[in-house]
Image 1 (cartoon, helix red, strand yellow):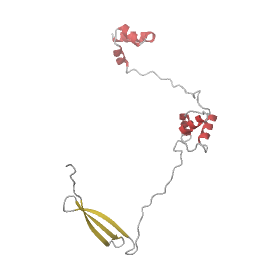
Image 2: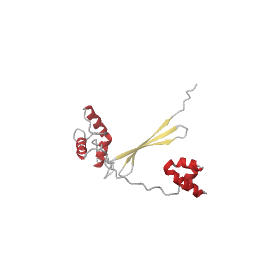
Image 3: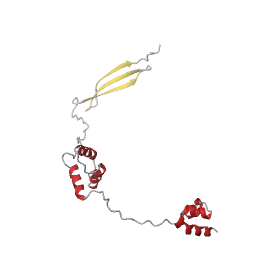
Length: 180
């Protein structure tokens, strides 16, 4: 019986549509689609998409690219160039077309001049004998009482690693009760 219903739907479908064919045969539309979902999809015909009739021709594209790379606009973003040209009453193409033209030539990048800084060199101290170069350090040490600290200041000769001078300073911080 199901093949008769399928045959009837297949015969009616081109003329009245799937929904009406299912209604006429008494089969729920969901059941019909569930039964036939494993059937192969129809072959999709590949269309040869030609260029849009509104697309810029190669001469116009070259004109836009030359304008974007001109000395006046070479360091500006395409959106800024677009608006500046509109202020002057000139319309060449949209901002997205400008980006498309630049992308086609591999020129989509930061257009402004970038500062190039030399690599930072970490200073290196070199001593060939004692007392040429000294270094220092401050260390915070916990004291014997809560909130008390000892600051140890040390001066070191970097050649011999001898402690040239040191000082220990006591700093005490008291918690103040301000809620009275």
